[in-house]
Image 1 (cartoon, rainbow, N blue to C red):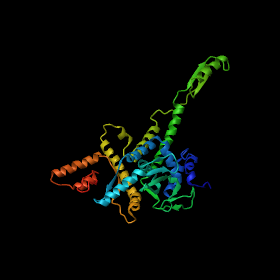
Image 2: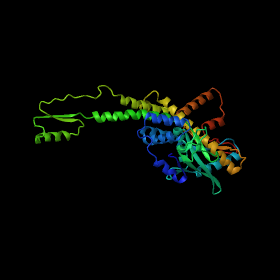
Image 3: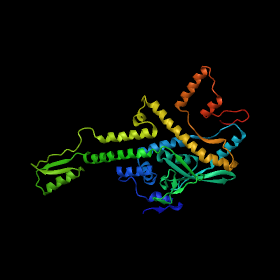
Image 4: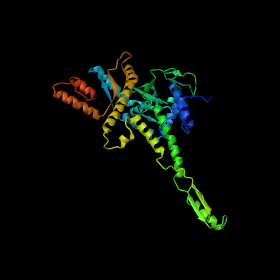
Length: 395
């Protein structure tokens, strides 16, 4: 009944005109949205995920760290073989990625280039899917393209294939996506689990806040010989009120009130629950918990750092493969003809992490034993430019 047709002119309004999906979020509401998400109705859960990422301090920070760690990586066009054709393909792809324009379908203020595209594609780590509409153009005789990021709540997945909706909230199947016009990035979808941890954290946080409001300040009791209603009595009442305590009382001489202590004598459970959810979220997003992140001499720090680098390596490989499959091949066909097979591809280059240093140490020990490695394979593994006689190309 509330479905409405969405056109390009109202996409930006659609994201801002909706109600707040996480206000008074309850377990039964979240469970229903997650069940619908798993069944292909992506809208309700996608709205909740977006709101949590924007408003929760921990999840928002973890999300940005995961996204920025990949967006900052050095992009490179590598050749898959040593040939003149591969050189030409490499040059075309370099110019292409330097000239692309990236936008958002819901916010006209968002504009950028390759780095913005990588950040938008990394949204799939949180939302499970990130979708871009691609329009290839001829810019000064060279192939270029514009990428427009569409929000996940505009799609449904009931048939096992993502389809775009004509109306937000419609129950009928959407329209199939043209593989040449749409690029779909798929990843872990961590917000499904993170939204549950968020809710389990918010409930004790709310109770903790109520407890602090009720028990954070002591009650004030004043005893006076003044007769109730007299000027002296009123002065005492005014003085008690100015102390600002939530609980206060003025008693005549001889009156007794017994206090009802609702405070906790032991350790409150709220902090333990909140910290438990925070550690869960850190492990989920970054491969390390709060104790490891905050400890300077923790013996597990090296292992946790290795786990974080594994996540970054996986994200970088996933982004590269999506671009190779959906963009690189199409650019080469537009530039060299429909029968052209790409001889170069986009790749994100990882920094030299500790695990790579360990690999180099192993290679050095093998060389000391008389085993000679293949120099081309080593250069390709560590993304090191290797001069080749007659070409001078990068591996």
